[in-house]
Image 1: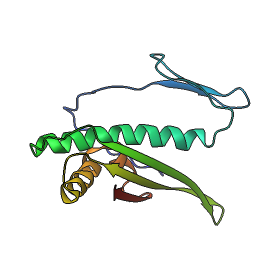
Image 2 (image 1 turned 60 degrees about the vertical axis):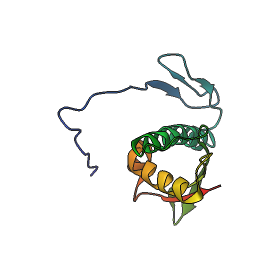
Image 3 (image 1 turned 135 degrees about the horizontal axis):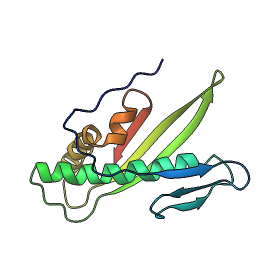
Image 4 (image 1 turned 120 degrees about the vertical axis):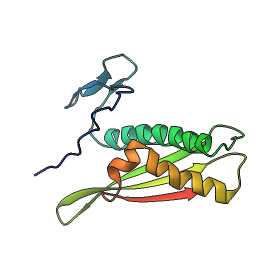
Length: 139
């Protein structure tokens, strides 16, 4: 049975993403606002690439937010190379993730602190916490 965590009663919706996705040889996904309109001939690697893109975009925003909370001025925008691996073992599928993080203009220790803090801020990081292996490396 799936469990859900209820949002606080005073939660404010910041943004809603809506897509319509179809499968098969003519598969595609399109967002309701038209921002995304992608052909998906195969479910994989499309799913892993889309997840990597969405998670890393959110994670970058979380790094910038963490820097702002600590009043750290970044020399430029952070960058993340995200890798999502789809694995199979014992008849089950599972994901592994690797995040290579570049935070320009700060020391390695500060970048590491911001990267760790960002995992506690980013909704994608929180959603997978304890569910998949995530390796974060400062580059």
